[in-house]
Amino acid sequence: MEAPKQPVEFPKIVIIGGGFGGIELAKKLKNKEVRVVMLDRHNYHTFQPLLYQVATGGLEADSIAFPLRKIFKNQQNFSFRNAEVTNVEPERKVVHTSIGEIEYDYLIIATGSDTNFFGSKELEHYTMPMKTIPEALNLRSMILQNLEEALVEQDPVKKAGLLNFAIVGGGPTGVELSGAISELKRHILPKDYPELDISSMNIYLIEGSPEVLGPMSEKSQRSSQKFLEDMGVNVLTNARVLNYDGNTVTLSTGQEINTENVLWSAGVVGQVVPGLPQEAIGRGARIQVDEINRVKGQDDIFAIGDVAAMITEKYPHGHPGVAPVAQQQGQHLAKNLLRLISKEKTEPFDYFDKGSMATVGRNRAVVDIGKIHFHGIFAWFVWMFVHLMSLVGFRNKVVTFVNWMWSYFSYDRGTRLIIRPFNRGTMTEDTRIK
Image (tube, rainbow, N blue to C red; front, top):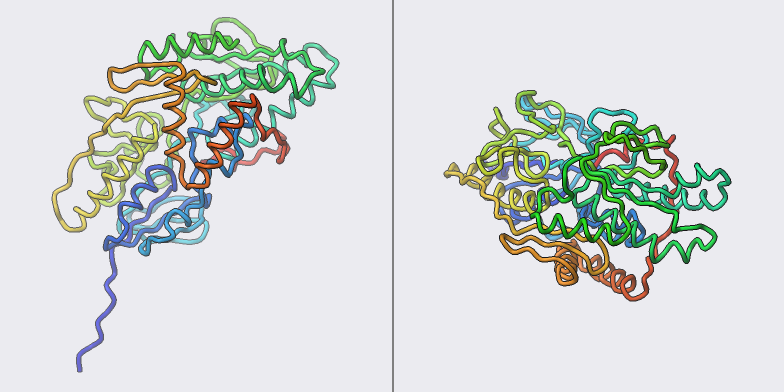
């Protein structure tokens, strides 16, 4: 009698992280002869480019988040586990998590990046990062709570500190945050807080290099800085933060700024999973990978997106930490994984740069596409369209579009709610992790 056939065990691909790269990788493996398991400490995908709008009351958090299980509801070879990864054990091909051990045939680390405080515990404690939805909600609550406190504060020095804002880091996040807070000051706060002298509110954008939006073209750098200055933002370039004690920011230029609102966007570090060999970890805590995103010294572990550093002649420090890089690496790695499984030749990754863009405020944005650089209202519409189409989920697109249209015509933002009061003394580690 013939023995019953055993079910075929397809290779198991474990993806750590439900960001841009992890999602694209998993999608490209749909209907393939593999098992895909995604692990993430949150059960949703976050559209990080619009976090600043959650922080400044332009959007609610659920407009930029989407359940991971819903993204893959029709993908039969996919499963999701809501778990925190503690470490990886390459020798046993096992990932240790808060829900137990998970074996893998191929492991993909797509954990993204976290805020870089450059080793300063004071900056980590007193400043506000914005890499996750919990952090954006904390930031929104802090801004609104400080405005409420300023209403009743009698000490003029203390009141000034509550009304002043310092944004550290002149990249896209810092520029967009500065512009959004400036629009709050101009259009919203005078109506919400008529008892406050909002004209005394100061907004500082602090950047250590000679220009803002360093990776973009000189034309975009000049245009964005002029936009910010026209909106009343004090742009301080060639200035580094030396210290912040919760009340006073001390700069390398000798200037001191009295503020209790310091928003930190000055740098990022990779979120490395413990257990990888130390020689695989490079500058900025990014994992060193080869031309197919395979981790240095490993045969079956890969890294994509912000956490990965693929050193090439064109990108000597690795690719930029932007969503298109993660998405393209995820898509390309899916093809190479299938080639590896079939014992076919792999193909090196080649990043196609579609351009860069940043918004400063209403009718103000800058766009670089190859050698084409433009700014102003047309660039702003291009920025809105690209970000709207990039959101996951039809509902999120509709809700965000309606919110934007309402804000544009009414000069108002409808989500100035302190739903979760912020207390710096009880901040948990969860607000620091992606």
